Amino acid sequence: MSIELKTLTKSYNKKLALDRVSLTIEKGTICGLLGRNGAGKTTLVNLVGNRDFPTFGEVLLDGVNVRENDKALRKIYCMGADDLIPTNMKIKEVISSMGYFYKSSDAKYAEKLCGEFKLEMGKKLSQLSTGYRTIAKVIFAMSSGADYIFLDEPTLGLDANHRELLYRLILERFEETEAAFVISTHLIDECAGLFERCFILREGTLIADEDSETLRSSAFVVDGKTEAVLLYTSGMEVISRSELGTLSSACVKGKPGNVPAGLEISKPSLQQLLIAMTADEQRG
Amino acid sequence: MKDFIGYALKNHAGLIRFIKMMCGVLCGTGVFYLITLIALKIDGTIGWIDLPLMELSGIVLSGVCFATAADSLIRMGVSCGVSRKTILKGLAAAAPVYAAVSAALTELAEEVTVIIFRLFGIRLRGLGYVTVDDLLWNATENWRTKVFGFCAVLMFTFGAFAAAFMYIAGKTHSRKRGVTAAVLTVFVYWIFSVNIDCKGWLYDLLNRAAEATEPWKYIGRFDPPPSLIFSQTELLTLTLIGFYLLYGLFAVIMRNAPIRGRETG
Image 1: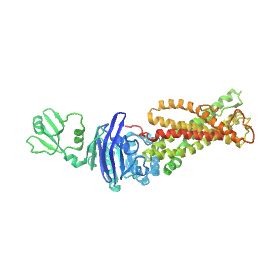
Image 2: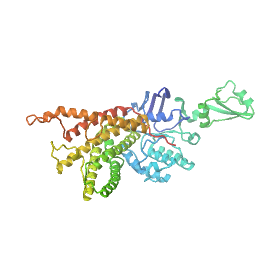
Image 3: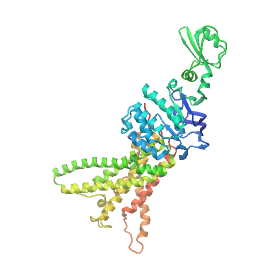
Image 4: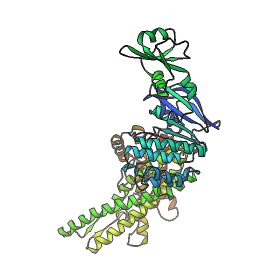
């Protein structure tokens, strides 16, 4: 079972928000959808969830186009960063409403999550703070029982404790249901441990679609004195470079060869790699 | 589609919320009319009012309530994986139920208002009396007048609902509520010209259609009068057709419209 995006393209007037994005999301995986602001992450989620329609290309669920397909769409839940669910609805009303559409939705589990996050079910969405509104939306998504759950900015406004709780609950739910989770976030290092696979978007184009480990192993960071770093990296594909006084750091694609003394080699974090891959300048 | 209709008619967030909203606004209007009543009593010279107070406000407010309810239904549907096709079919099926409930509540509120005013010695005359031509139907205070009044309210409620749909369509595309509301006002005036004379483009069209069919009813009985005034049920049927024509336009606009919600954070 999988969702396949085929040459998905979306343009607004003449601006390309997504440019021929093709990727596959297997059921039973947690994927990271990463990229800078305006990279096209939310557009992608909106297209998958039938909230918007592609200019070109299609989204297939087990080979069937999801566009205007109720049966296929009920297997997908997209939690958007925006407020699509009417904010004048109470949390318990939304949970009961979901039962009409998602036959596997679990109201008891939703209640349990509300308890864990100390969220009052009798409150309206409009009465909640940004953080609690995000929590409510995440609860709706996780209790939907959908096979593919897209979480767009699930950590928006959440404090550190709630974020930790959220990551733990996502992992628990993933183990219970084996649903696919696609998480779009800017807190990459915090979520890095969750991601099995990463999709990186840059200005609407998919620039990476790899296992997290493979992606991290595809580059290395070299630190040391600027002259030594420059000398070592000459002829190599430098993704990004930064300088601080006489010290320099470079993120280089490939495997490190013989490393001269005085230079330090390390594996880049996912966040470092993303910054390097999506930076506007400092390209080597 | 069953799921969506079930949600629209049975769930708390659907019809029940709409009924609560309608009751709320009608009660609010009732308070306003009580103030009017006190003012009239203080004046002491007016014994009757030839104006369907609660009915007219009920119709306008039902449009506002329905716009809110329908917008919620659409957004909830989209966020729960319901296709536009299903949402549009479901709304088309649910709207007449909402309209009937709304008209019934409005009529009930009107009756209560009439009773309260009568207790204070002031007679209110509702749409059922105002629109009846005494030559065709010698209106008396009987059950037929009530049915007639209900039909009249229902007819205008459909007009208000059609306007609500147009508002949602405009808001979805422009995301500028003020501009949409302004354009809609002009549109409603042009299409409906909502008043009891039934002028306006749509009602003129309906009147012409009714005029064309009217003689068939009177074959062998008597010649139709030169200036025709039609029964409210006929106009109601034709309004329903007009409503669905406008709903078709709404469906075309909404078919591929992006529905994304408001940005937060």
